[in-house]
Image 1 (cartoon, rainbow, N blue to C red):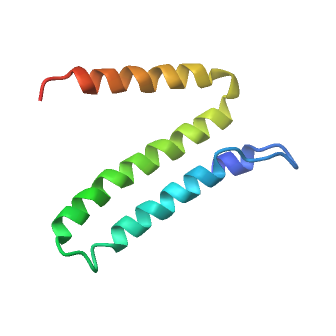
Image 2 (tube, rainbow, N blue to C red):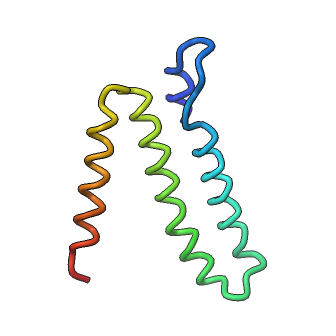
Length: 90
């Protein structure tokens, strides 16, 4: 996230900053919800799923900022990974 801000041109917009920030805030709220949860183990598992999602999304935003011409390759890699996970037997 900091890398994306540092690599932004002067006076330019930092695209992806709001979505990453909101996803991180949602992840923090999910982690905090274990305090008042009726089933804390389920809330903890949900937090365990939200954290890697937020990190991967933030990394994708940073990669799109570092190599703006290569975002189609990033999108293709994410699509390929999603297909592999969906096709794998459980």
